[in-house]
Length: 318
Image (tube, rainbow, N blue to C red; front, side):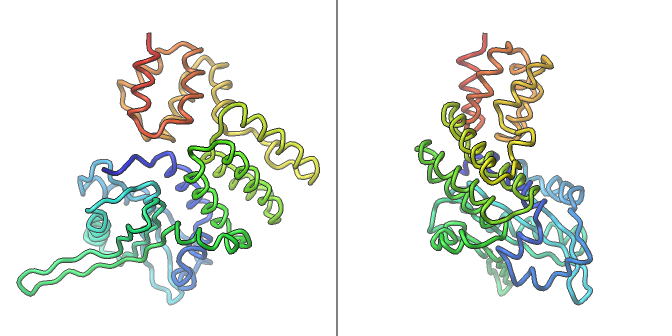
């Protein structure tokens, strides 16, 4: 069974939407070269929702559907599917095929499907779907990038100024350090320092730090140590990019939410990490005391799926 992947999916979706041309330049350079980026592009969220609803695929979803123009003037649609935490799934390639033909069937547009696999199984590399019966054949293949492969040449990632080099390094180290928070602190500091060393613009530093910060969560004591180091770094570089903006971290968000006497922010953070919570679970959360909400805000850093949330509620709900 595929493990829920929302805790990684949410920041990935945000960063892809912010840096779409850079995404293709990094992962799919041939497509990047063929697309006329000067003509712009449009995210087709409404069209995508309609396709997924028509396909009756339940929680199966495609991350981004984008309209672009090729340099030869043709309009085409791009399907970007991010399978960020997935384990082996026998029906994966079939699923990509279903999305692909549903879009073509409904909108009669030529579609290109692109897959990024962020799982830890080096042997799982689905790239085609097909079958044959009575002389009739279906052969569907799609380009795939495996993040594990990119991690084999770490030096190349370090020296690459494309934002997705940072994204890939943060993703891989978040996986590798999930059971060693001290090591995670060291890598979080290293990746954050690199943002300044690469000479990114202020907004790029902020955007990429938000990605790093979301994936590489730390316990309170190590988080405090992290921020001490960052304050010192920004004083030395005279570039107060991160500490000058309101941090989107969970602990500060909880504090602001409690000042308003609301549980809304806690729910938003849970939705970003685990996906949309059910109405019944939302009701339970809104009945928690301020102290319980503060505890939940800290505990959700370690939640991997909805079962973890339900277990916490059963142990802490009055």
